[in-house]
Image (cartoon, rainbow, N blue to C red; front, side, top):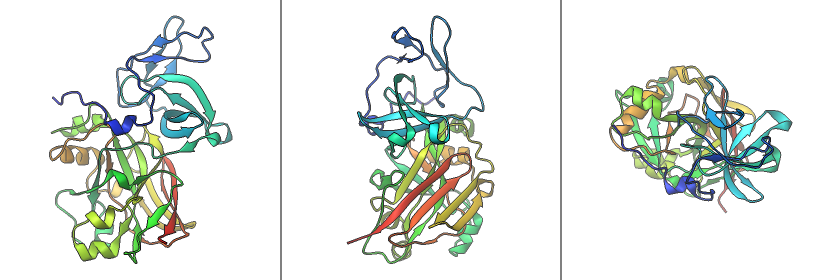
Length: 321
């Protein structure tokens, strides 16, 4: 069995630490903090308010969105509540993976800035996981998952600029479903344990300097530039990834339109396979591959990646000076 793994320090950067699970709920009226428990750490639960104690419990099928936000007091993880103009961000005390506490502080969603929803220790990527995408680049479908890494420094959040490197003339978008790993992480996990280790999902853009990829053969330089891994807008903890639409638009023009049902290797299989090679820590991200339709974009254009059931991640490209 995998020993308990603490979330990497990067996850906690800019967060208020928490050593004991407690919750201050503004509607209780007495101002007291109460202990809470969470028997299933993989998803953030619904708040129930019994007379003498407050617990966080799970309700299957309830949409739970976890964001990382910049607000007037700093940066925090937040539970997003509601939709549209009335949506709010409820501050989480510390990180959201194990015991969860709300501070009682809330902001209108329009008054905070969404950041990359997680700061992973590593981003593990899967190449050619859609047969049509493999074919469009003239590649065979792999018999096993094809793995590569993006550095954590490539991660940016919603609305941040994708900086196009001067040494590349062909930077392309790759819209993807991204897995976020939760507690206890995954090491040598079978498929069942791997599924349990999945905390939730978010949108990703595996930005690629295609000309450099073709020149180098291996992927590190082509996919590792700063800003080449947009993630967001938040983590969705209750998504069925069996048949979710994956879409990419450039300035509103649809460039990619596929479905996760066409994946060669499903999310749990990928997490299990990767965990035989390297330990996946809580907060690590796995990019699951891109459907067909990849193509280039230019400075000044906005690239939007959408996954049905999650939301839309948009980033504007900026040419190097």
